[in-house]
Length: 224
Image (tube, rainbow, N blue to C red; front, side, top):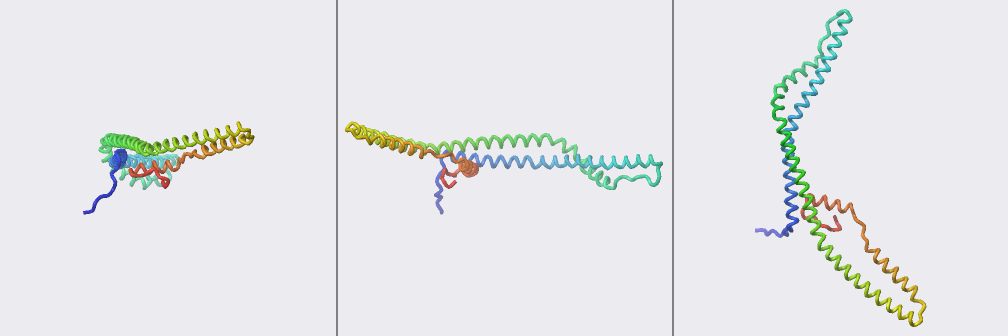
């Protein structure tokens, strides 16, 4: 029997995995709630479009009849647009269902709103879980950074104190060169401190957030 060697997720990562699953479930619920509402609203929309089209056909016919009357009824009386018959038949067909559609429309709207609210809440919870994962990932990095800074500052202070002491001794012995060497030392310290600054990589941060939104195992690595 194969042994599962997949490492267990940390509590924060497991919470994120659960949150990702909850967002997926909420999305599915929204789709389930939206599909019937879309059908109902499609029928109501079709009815409105057909009624507008039929009104246009009838207006054209009425104007034609009026012009025919104004002209002394010469020739054959204008006939309705033949397309209006098909529109009327379709309106009769769907008109039988419209009262039923309207009777359940509001409850399906409410069901969709409730599903959307669940999705919004699930996404917000997932974002909180992502924050918790980033915070947990940052803690050891910050601890290491603090230790490295402490070592560097200790080395800098000790070295600087020693070099300054040597230069002071040389000045006391009449050496005129230490002024330039002290300036070099100060500039070197400034250069080292300046090289430590690392600009924020917003593109990489966005890629990490995108990955964490669907993958609870995504790591804060240079390859992201």
